[in-house]
Length: 135
Image (cartoon, rainbow, N blue to C red; front, side, top):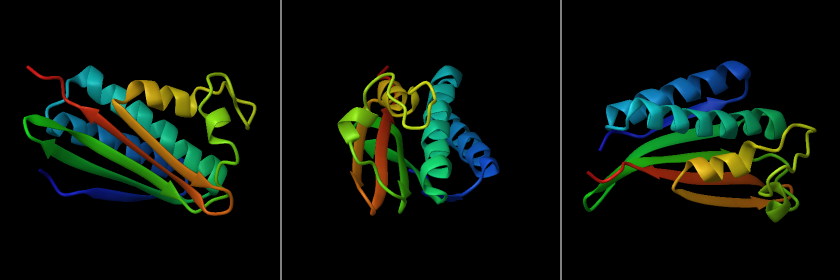
């Protein structure tokens, strides 16, 4: 599969760049336009969280192949304050910033696999995968 892409995230412009790069990579590996848009939305949410809560971090994109399945892995990582209560942060409607609380729960719904590791004072890493539909 293609080489991984890693982008530093520290500004709104970086969020836009990560979203565009993710959409392009998704299309390149065979996702439909609508699937690529969903992937770009998830990347945008993850990158926006980095800017909003940690100030800076990294988003990495990697095409993957497992047997007959192909897809895209997205890892968003930061060394920010971490999430004190992960289960609360993953609850629909919860927001620590006064927003709508759609971020992490929305990302979890958009993607096929979702893993979040966070520790207060140590940062947060979210790893998600989207698999191409089988033909």
